[in-house]
Image 1: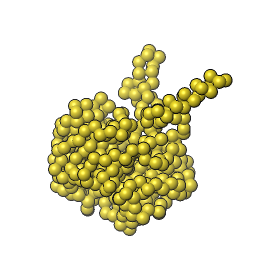
Image 2: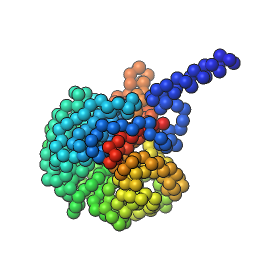
Image 3: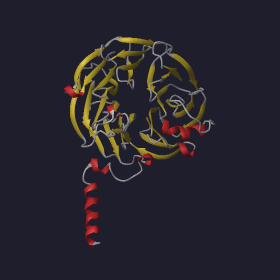
Image 4: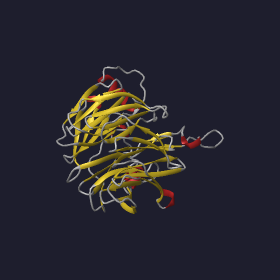
Length: 373
């Protein structure tokens, strides 16, 4: 018994030794919520506008008004490199591409989009030109070979990342397209403009179809997000739809300068409004477990809303010293299933995805905060 006790103590000590081991603690990741920041990382000289996690490694990128992108190791809390190339503020960044060729995309107030290759020392391999005004958002399609961008020139463009050519322009907005979000299967696109948001069916990119225009906010929309499938059991009852089978574009959220968050269904109906922030809502992310929605705002806070309790705010964190501009959740890590012949499932597509309890925020205080379980 004494040996078992000593062994238990040593195991506990080991589990608390490194950040990586702390992430492996026996806890239910579907109920994890952030608390105190593990790291507060500083190197940018101006506001941080955007963050993005590498899909596999412990790298995270941040983009700033100082025209640079910085690559950090979120596990160690260390700066790895600084990328220079944009001549004005970096507005958004996103990792994507094919699994064997992950790329980082960035967009800027200099009207350009740049593609960087992490495996080649983040070399700038391509610059995409075509927008006539500030490029405010970039998102990779799940397939990895296409990139979407949104701009103040009122257009959404679709780019072939291999050739760098614009292969499609999606028109319909009458003003600055501030943010875009893709459903997890890439079939639906949500875009925000002024006080509206638009839901598009892009399952056929040759003929994008506007499905709904979402009306309800009383000021400009700053951000939007599709709900993952894990959130459907919590959202369907709130929307009065029961626990029926759903499509990837059935539920979504928008955040606005009117200080509220609205939840919508695919019919264009707002079925819940979340109030509590005392400033512009700047970014949203659904918890991968589906039960919570997280948000950040100009009131310097990060808030957690429980969708199983009618959207009740169950946690409020004073996240930054000034406006909070961005929020991202680290993507899960796919575990490759070994076949009977000893081989792995191709691309790991048949593997289990382990949720990572790690989020990042950035703000006007020039700090990148890492919250990890």
